[in-house]
Image 1 (cartoon, one colour):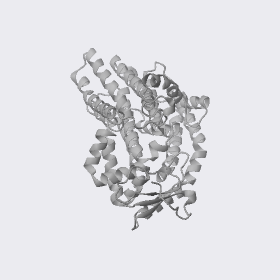
Image 2: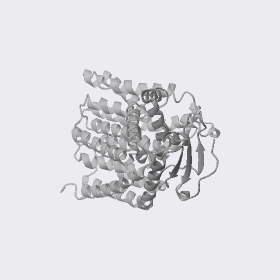
Image 3: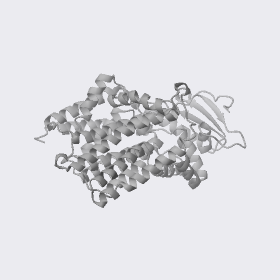
Image 4: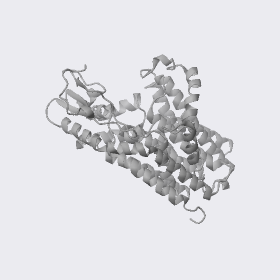
Length: 463
């Protein structure tokens, strides 16, 4: 404490305040069409549906298996189970990163884990990443694996089992993590071969290489092959690799420098105050040159994958999509910074580092305070809307009412318009609101935004 001053304690207090404020909002988490439709389909044919999604649409074995179990439990319980799911995901992420940090020899592993988590909450848009269960299961799990791997690599921890397991966990959770792990694994094997490293140094990277390559091959020959998700044809970006590679540069640099909701220059200053002041590894300057090379490769692959995700979005969608991807990129920049501060030859004194870090987090919390207050004020309405929807869905009969909860500025929410959707007799339900009706065993769903929740039912159905 004498060496670092009160900076670490102040940072703890600010980060815990932020974590508590954002954590209160997990009760306002929400389902979109995905949970209802996938939950219904997997209830009808659990293994066949899960296998089909992994082979042809979402090659994420870890995320898809966890999602299937979660939706099965929710279906059986008759409740969305959003709070348990998000609470376990949040606590599990912090616990995993802190536990691996302690194993790697970090000075303050729990403070570092909480700082990284809170920084990601406040720098990016938490809407989908932290409050939408299907996105949280995939992206937060993947980020947790990447973050834990970063701590092992920056401390040169010889974890020939733990490190591959973390990388496979990340790659099998989402494709964005797979495009970090694939080039990194290949480069690490090449580096180990060139430096004639012991066999364990090469074998440790084979499983991550195989896992990430499998994910990339499946998604490129499955979901991406059909080019069926173009959102903006007028941009002429979809399917145009040369244009995509060039056009991705500006959003990449903007992402790298910005904080969501802040003007560019103030956001850049606050972001640097946090990223550049992250504590370095405990023993980084005692490592052999090979450790520095490995960490540099890891940092380069994090940044390369962030850029590649924009290129791939432009190629697949014709535009930069989606909010969860943008948040994941901010998480990658955060981990890259964590590696860079350990590679930097400049040692910033702890008495300077910690007050700047505390000031950066305090500034972000002040900036987010109005949105947090507005979001928390919506919490009772969001809880009431979800409870009313599930209660209506579980009543006997073929018709139900879906109350659309008000969307929070930070936690987000669905945006369905007022309408009545019918599933004609003899036809299987499709994706979207038909999937909501099918999940509850209904043929008709009357959709009412929160502001129209007491209005009389709408006549007619949207085909």
